[in-house]
Amino acid sequence: MSSHPDFKLNTGALLPAVGFGTWQASEEDTYKAVLAALEAGYRHIDTAAIYRNEGAVGRAINDSKVPRSEIFVTTKLWCTQHTTPEKALDQSLSRLGLEYVDLYLIHWPVMLRTEHAVDGNLLIIPVRPDGSRDVDVENWNFVKTWELMQELPQTGKTKAIGVSNFSINNLKEILRPELGLAVPSVNQIEIHPQLPQEELIKFCASEGIVVEAYSPLGSTGSPLLTDPEISAVAEKYQVQPAQVLINWGVSRGYVVLPKSVTPTRIESNFKHVNLTPEDVEKVSRIIDRIGGKRYVDPNWKPFEAFV
Image 1 (cartoon, rainbow, N blue to C red):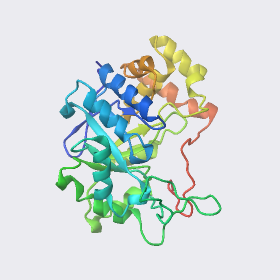
Image 2 (cartoon, rainbow, N blue to C red; image 1 turned 120 degrees about the horizontal axis):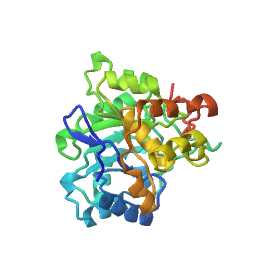
Image 3 (cartoon, one colour; image 1 turned 30 degrees about the vertical axis):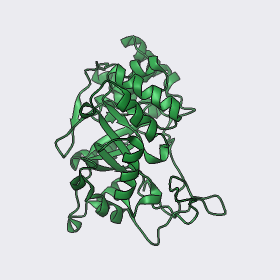
Image 4 (cartoon, one colour; image 1 turned 90 degrees about the vertical axis):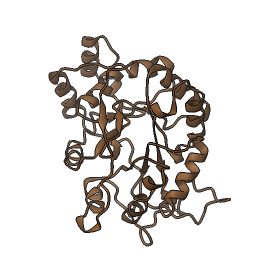
């Protein structure tokens, strides 16, 4: 088992510092990987409606020997369902085969039009004739979505609500005092040494919002896993570069969501490594040498997600 800490949400719930991500994994790979993760000691599983693998996540949870009460499960509201989050959550629960999730997030602060949905399938990314995403900024905004999200914990279908991919300005919009809306429990964002997000992490901490890091190893084509300085730190602790990156994140005070479909990596990613402050700083300075990069950057124009 891991000796990673838990983070306390503003609901009082405890969120394990290292969770298991399932983005970009097929149904079969997801099922096997989640089973392996639970066997390795993970108790925090992250999925989303648009990943189209909630069914596999739920089957793995139900087929594991771990009691449901011991597993923290997160899923997310997709952009085509911002006007009906409770209905979307019902559909996610049906796919998961669960009675509740522990955390339900707005996946992106963007509404997509649904005119081109076929047979009621809203788990799509509708596009305009020019190939750009069919974003609706005229009829809806994420503040309205957040207002509707407030009702969900009272239903018992989710124990907490939060957001994902929200910038400081977007958070400030839903936190305006005159609105009287709940403070999100979580903001899940891309974080790694090429995108350290220091200002956003600091803002979330000031508001009592727990930060979660997706893509903590970078993404396809990322140089982080082969970076000589990260490799040197890994060699010092006799671990893999991925373990350095995961524990760098935990050391900075937020939840990290690594993903793998390889059982040995799933297990090694869960290992706690007590990095010294000097080594945390060494990894933090890598951006000065290799430059910054956001790997997950969809075109939501005319909406600017990260402003």
